[in-house]
Image (cartoon, rainbow over all chains, first blue to last red; front, top):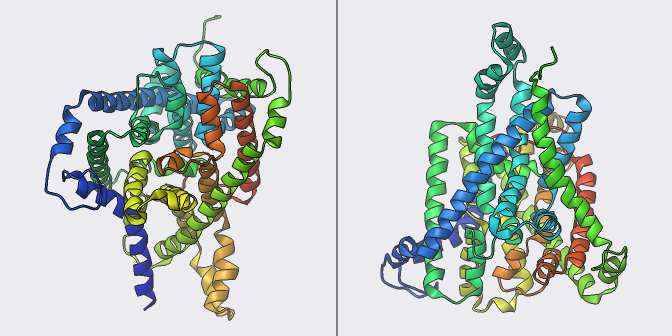
Length: 272
Length: 266
């Protein structure tokens, strides 16, 4: 009896979380312009999505930005964590505290403050993409730092020393010993950085060139506009992303790489 | 030998420079802009404007209302869910939990689009219930972030404590109120933080659900569109103050080693 109520509650919660996305998925395969009316099967939305140069370049740009900023954030966050871990306690603590600022801060404030510094005060041209990339790196590097740090704490320090004793130069010991040992943390940081960048709206709005759109800013603009074919093509995009996320999660569970699986959940939990 | 010697500490330098330039500097610039006017003269006019203008004060109140109601809704839904997931007789808890948090990997603007389409069918016109639509939107967006930390504290809960309470004669409801609930406070606090602060600032949810009322975040957006950097900075500074006050207060109630691993169980 008690188990029955529990099950019903969980199912209701899952319905709340999934029904909107699934309805949108079903309607993305019809020629309906609105939810509610039953229409015939159609792949028109997917065809539009993959043939519209505007949508394709928007998606490509979003992915490029996500991967590019994630690479930068991963390099910076990783060396930052290694450096801070071995630095004097006071320096290390300082870095820890400042690193926490973008994590706790609201994205609106982070984006706006970077916009003021780079664009208003320093006069950097928005069209150079520099503010946008820096903004995304500021957003995600601290999370890379936070996911590498625990790996450093778990690591046996004598391995690095042994490498030096056996004649490795410090740089060799770093790249051949330290970095491979930290790889799980670095990888999960990278995945987190990619998802953070893909999900971001606020930092992009305040720092992006006027002609460039990420998925988030594009979707928000499209809701304000009245172009039906764009609107329904975005349903198709949402469905594709939904399916890819499911595939990714299944794949990660199968390959049981727990560290990568942490990816995004870490985000808000790290916000504290 | 006066040659440059590489040590691991030196790796911190680029990251420190980066943090200094793009995290600390922007905050200093925000403070400077908040207390100056267009001519660069010191002024507290921006601060006074915010606290004496009926519109901005109304925004603060509305924003607080949205945040409080959304957070409570999330908590009321998430606590039982997390409890059932963590304490129930499930074989694959982590897989079940994964299903609950999977939606947050989908871009939030697309998720809100889906919600909007569904709500507009159910309600015919979204303009009838702007406040409640916003609460539903925030709940829909942030619910997994509330479930996750509560789940992680509950799943770690030591069973022997509950058994001891039962042996000492506590009724099930007493065990829950006096043992389980107090021990899950760190998770609740983390969850509340993850919902309360974003619901003050995520104005895209309101925009997309056609709620034209402002919350705190929308003020920054509108000053940004108007190129009013000084008033915008003042709002950013006020938000920063709220965020850091809440974080420091909440930090006291949080499990010391919770911070990093909300998702570690997956």
